[in-house]
Structures are given as structure tokens and as C-alpha cells.
Length: 156
Image 1: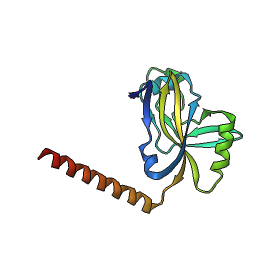
Image 2 (image 1 turned 90 degrees about the vertical axis):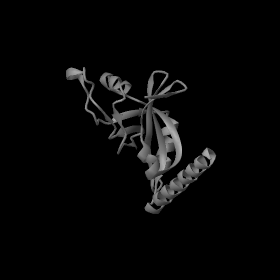
Image 3 (image 1 turned 135 degrees about the horizontal axis):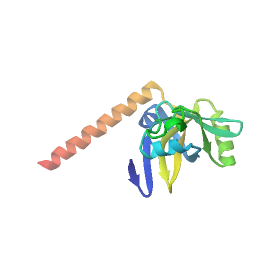
Image 4 (image 1 turned 45 degrees about the vertical axis):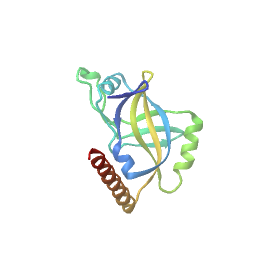
């Protein structure tokens, strides 16, 4: 787990920044069972293919995988169960209104502990087209080549 300014990052969703344009980010708490918290503290979580949805005025997180706790016996949880997100009602209503727009979705970017509480950073995102992904990869490669050339030049 990475730690910065009292925040312990459990897992990141690096693929989300590759596949989506991030428009806004929100912080939400997660409603967890006891063994899930212990697994998260051990860093046993995965956000690949996870997404959030708003149903009946409540926000839920789908497909987030939290591995069962090793010492958890029969009280362990289902690894991919739907988890409720804890947000203010006005935030949920605002998100519901914007998500209804074409092409917008809620994607979790990272899971972390802040002041002892498990939190999710949710992003309001728009899917990238294939040419956008190619363009981003090309600009990253160009930036990397320039940095490498500068570094080599400074060595001489």
C-alpha cells in the first residue's frame, strides 16, 4: 500500500485513465463487512472491470473484487458482491442527472483508507474512442523519448 498525507492507497484502476476521459472526481465511503475490511487492509482488492450505478436514489459499486480473508472461516464474504456507496443525497442526485447524459459513466479510480475509513474515488467519465487512445499513447511515447534524450544530454 502506498501512503501519502494520511491516505493509504489500497488499489488503483490504471486502466480507467486509459479507457476514459475523466471529467470530475468524487469521494465516497463504502459499506463493507468485517472480513472485507481486513482484506482491504492487506491490499487484496482489484478494481478491473468495476463500475458504479445509481439505483433508487442510492449508489452501488459492482464487480469490485475483494479477496476472502484467509482467517475468515465461514463468515467470509462473496468476493464480487454489490457494495453500497455512501454519499450525500445531493451528490447522488447530481450524479444521476449527469450520468443520464449520453456516454457518461461512473468509474472507480482507487480505493484507499482515509482517517481509518475505506473510501472510493469515483470518476464521472466519458469513454475514449480508439483514436484517442492511440493519440494518448503516441504523446506518452514522445514525452518519454524527450525525457530520455534530455537525461542522456545531461550525462555528457
